[in-house]
Length: 405
Image 1 (cartoon, helix red, strand yellow):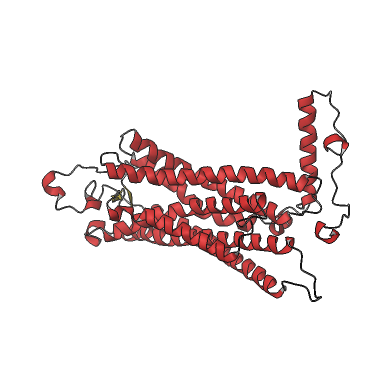
Image 2: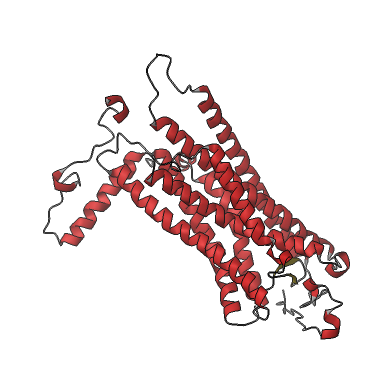
């Protein structure tokens, strides 16, 4: 197959024609010097179909898990049948945190599904029919819609990842605060605020801040990556900084939550405070953050660096980093599908996925670290605890803290 020469057909319009040309076609106008192949149409269709089927499957699994948890919570009374006795607090707090996390996951998978369906259908239709965008959309309404969809469905996963990191940070580090025990209603409200904020950013070009333009090879519209106009520069920097700030918040809060969770799971009160469900949620959240960082950081950094240096965005790299970002919508649902204890036990049944294995692993790593730092002089106790204290093992049967009162 001969290598394809990319001809972006960038032309600067003259002042006389600028008044007659719609804004989305003012920089480049289709048709482009582009020869579509059958492989590109099949690739776009398979790419979109894989993402849609993955997100739909994950959404069905999530909704079933959420409905089962809601049914279990509604069938459990708030107080026991005996007068004067109250049900202990840890069970409803863990159930509420798990339900709110499932709601965020449902919102993330639903957003990825809708983003692939809206943008993928346009791209696949272009490769299948080779329509002329200028004739189909002479007033830029359709182009603006796709540009807003690209920005909205691009920012939503990053903002939802940051919101999930905030929820887990408060649930692990501030469990008894107001936001530490987030209800399902509050989780839905927080998710709605994320959608509203992303929608407000996507609508800024309609208010004159930034603009959406047709992009090579004519199958999609996106924001204008240029520093020639101050408003385009502002919108590009806003889009990049919101995405990068969301990733930074997720990284910082998730790091603190993981450190706290390791101390809680592997500390002296590990048996009294079993947190297997929180470990599972943090593992899923860490993988969501890593996938988002790998997929979106190149595009966000590329946009910010291009406009700050006052250069023209190379189409080849823009398409490359955009395809990287699209993989985020395909990989997100597989995080919940694969990284569950029930699935991991089936994939690798010899591995102990309980909290006891985490305790033994953490103790071994801590003993090895202390021995290397001490140079072999300081003897580490057999149990790995401080001052000769041995952390309790899963075999010990200490009564829960709530039953001792």
